[in-house]
Length: 452
Image (cartoon, rainbow, N blue to C red; front, side, top):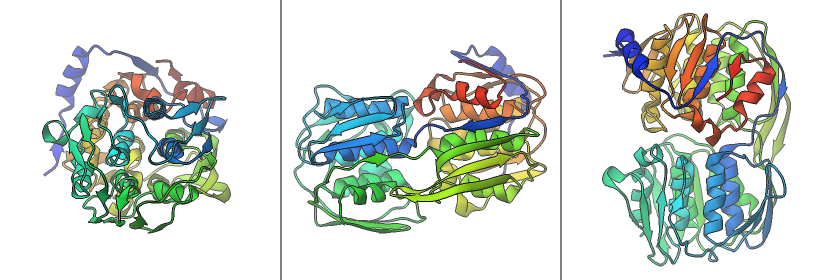
C-alpha cells in the first residue's frame, strides 16, 4: 500500500526548522546559453586511485574540484603519494606502484564520499599495514557490508561499526585469494572494490552482476595496462598485474549536467547547450527517461574516447508526460532520481517509480526527502518502500529541507524555477561535494537563484 505523506504535518515540522544555510530561488526567465559542467566525479576518484598505483607519473585533466574528490587526493597523499596541482582541474600523480603505498599516520577521511570508502576498502585490503576509513555523519550511516562481506570471502580482515557501517578498520592479512562473485546488487562500487582487491590477489577475480553497471573501472584499468576481460554485467582479471602510467582526460559529469538538462526542459522558451558530457549508457538512464516523457534533447558532436562516448546536449523546453519508469532504467539513473522527481512534479499526469529502494541508503533517504519536499511545495506524492507515485502539477513555492544532501538541494533549486512563489532550500553546504560553482553556473543560464 502507498505511504501517503501528510502535507499539513510536514509544514509544521518545516516551520520549526532553523536551517544552517539557504538557497533562495524563485521562478526564472527562459534559460539560455552554453556551459561546461565539472568533470565526472566517478572517473575523477578512479583516476587518482589508479594513477597512485601506477609505476610512474600520470597526468589527470578535467579533474572535479569537489570536496569528495579532493578527499581522495588527501588520502593518497597520506599514503605516501606525491600529487601536484599545476592548475585548476589538473593533477600530476607520481605513482608508487601497487606495492609502494605507505602506512598512514592518521585515519583516512573519506568525507561524504561512499565511492571513495567502498573502493578504498578493496584497494587497501591487501596492503601490509593497518588503516582506518572514516567519513562524515552522513557517510557514517551508509551500509558497507555489500563490500566488506565479499572482501572477507577473499580473506580480508575489515571490521566495521554496528550494522556494518563506518568506520572501517582494515588489518593486514597478506595475500588475498581471488573469487568468483555473483553480486546480489547492481553496484559499480561493489564491482570496483572487488576488482581493485583482485589486482593484489592470487588467481582470478570474477564479478557477475544482476544488471550491468557503469564500466569506468574496467575501462580505466585497461587504459593503465591491466589485462582485464569485461562485458556488460561481467568482469574478470588475474592478480599480480602492475599498472603503467597514463594520461586521463576526464569527461564532463552527466549527473551534474542533469540539473540544467531538467531545468531547461521544464522552463518555457528555454534553449541551452551542455558540452563534452560523458554519455556512457550505464550513466544516462535519465536521458532516456526524459525523452520517453517527451523531452526535446538533441545529442550533437558525438565522439568516442578511451573512457566512453561524449557529446554536447542541446536542450529545449518541452512539456512532459508522466509515465511508469521502466525498472530496467533504474540502475542507470540511480544518482539522478532526485532531479527525476523534480521533472515528474511538473509533468502532466502521474509518474510511477518502483525498484529504487537503493535511494533510501544514499546521502539521505532520498525517496522520503523528495516526497516530503514535493509535498511541502504542493505536489501530491504517494510514497512506497521502493519508490513513489508523483502526481504532476504546478509547485506553489515554500520551504524545503535538503537534509545536507547535495543532490536534493540542487533538485529543489531546479524545481523552484517553475514554482509560482519563491522556494527556500535549507542545509545546502554539501553541494560543494559534487558541484562546486553550481550557483554561479546556473545563474549564467538564467536561474533565479541566490547564493548559499
